[in-house]
Amino acid sequence: MEQPQWIFCPACKNKTRLKIKEDTVLENLFVAEQNEEYIETGIIPKFSLCSDGVAWFQQHGQWQDGSYTPKAGDIIFFDWESDGNSDHVGIVEKIEDGIVYTIEGNSDDACKQRNYPIGSSVVCGYGIPMY
Image (cartoon, rainbow, N blue to C red; front, side, top):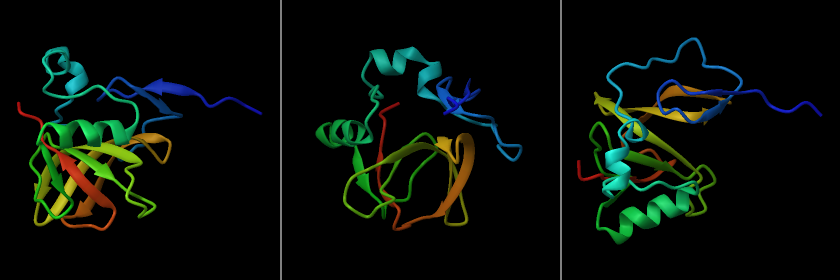
């Protein structure tokens, strides 16, 4: 079996699979990993399991459910399986006309811009960093 090819996402510097899709837009993007001070000072947690990220924001009183209208820089957590557990994460890039635009790694094996209506059933909530 062939091993997946890895490249580094130009936005978050984390590994993503295969390639950056042609329609990915990476402008006006905030990424915590590019500013280590945010992680070192506890503004943003460093986590690998989405559930750990959710727990951190909840424990720090910085959590909003999926009905919240986010702001650019908020961390968006998804629950694709509707089982109450977050299994994907991204960062809010912008909000326009009731649509949340995100940047997500490992989205269809790439780093991509996605969008969802505010209140979408796949959004379990938002971490609100204290920038």
